[in-house]
Image (tube, rainbow, N blue to C red; front, side, top):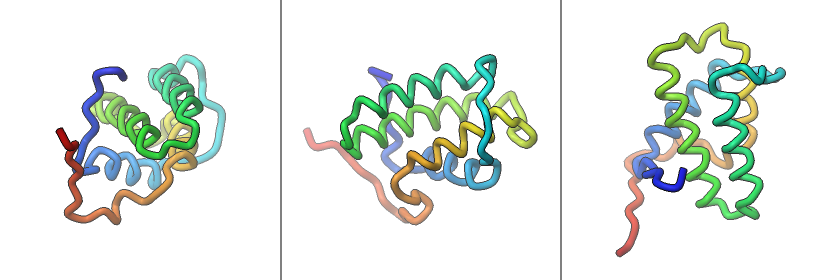
Length: 109
């Protein structure tokens, strides 16, 4: 997480949002799920942000990147562990990134 480069076009967040909208359903996250540890780390980071939205978005983007990697080799449909994680991720996301058209954020030097 320390060296994470957030996606300044919001494409990664948009993809995670769409996946979450499609597959999310409340449930228990099995500790053995491949994304469980990453999601726990993300939640730990989110709890330490003290309401700082930009930092929270970076954590959610970091986790969205983990999901992209996971989705390359695993089917998300029918994955109850991912469905539970996606439901929690949606609950933490503070805006709909699919409504961010032609937006890119750049850091000032």
